[in-house]
Image (cartoon, rainbow, N blue to C red):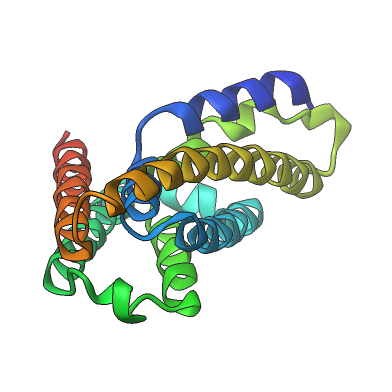
Length: 200
């Protein structure tokens, strides 16, 4: 396995704007670092789950069925659109306890189970870093997935940290409902971007 090269590729992928980055930045800026970190835990769990599924054959299934790949892309866009709608409708609810620990974790998990960028990476890029002569393709894949999860989690935690600072500044100057409506706008932008990619 080419671990160093894979780690660099993973970092570049996670530093590229996508569903996780947009959602985490909007959430932490709106509801604080605590909600962002709980979502980060859900995201890490989702990435690990997708990685394990890919190690045991999902990658080949998606690669062999373009319709399934497109369906996953549309599912991700629709889910982000729903998150935007939910944030707008329930604007201000977090201030009165409307955003529970399980809710933020679950959303992070679901977002990544339907994250097209994640599937694209595990299907089209990760296999290039395996060492076929070395055998144990499943074990190698799982090891690389673990590296990816660690790198992604570190980057996501950093995003939450920066956005959490913005939350402290914003909450001192605006009411919770206004912040949540701004979050809804950011999520809508991510959803539209994912929809545009799904049409490509």
